[in-house]
Length: 238
Ligand code: UDP
Image (cartoon, rainbow, N blue to C red; front, top):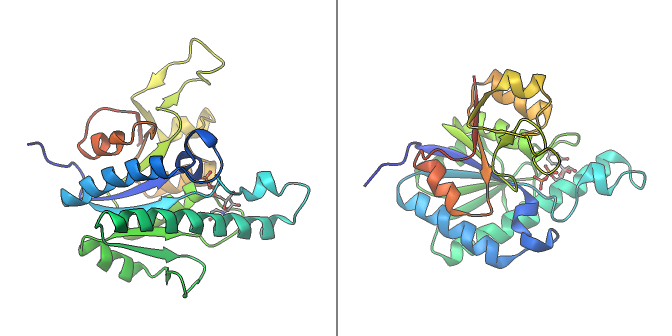
């Protein structure tokens, strides 16, 4: 049997991906499928850290625009990520996977505070660690949080599970000539303003030379395919 290509991964799941077709709230059918695959990864000895978004409940900049002060709206967004963390943790636990939630903003009654050394210890023991509240700061995204945590825990790769199956030269829904890249450099993503991650997240991954593999979560088995080194999605690296 083939071996996993990575020892430690940082999986970023957008909030929307957890909402399934509804695009708001939680679809436990989808969450169950995703968690099954995460379980398979841990059973193969892969250490899994997860950063989850909150867009299925609230996006500060979009949902709060014109109605709320940005910082407070972003606080709500970070709390939304925590809802997703707890849902994922619960489903993983029901499957017998050991899991810890660590939040960047302290919520001691419901989760551990984020402590890097402790997170690494959990990973080494085979526990899945789910990082909540993004970076803990407003004006950032959970994509940036994913890169930050990946750098901190020294992850081999960031698996960016999105609702699109790769990076295209143009929006494939609008341009029939759009081509999908198997590989693209950070420089080209930035120069061409390609919608992979926001600028902050892309430049942080570039500065720290962390490869980012973007693929569609529509088929959750893609997480396993990515871990096994199959050619899926688009890899962003130097
Ligand atoms: N957020 C934030 N700081 C962070 C990460 C997230 O303030 O470091 C807030 C922000 O309001 C954002 C929301 O949390 O809109 C949800 O995160 P994101 O939009 O990245 O979620 P996703 O699109 O991945 O579901």
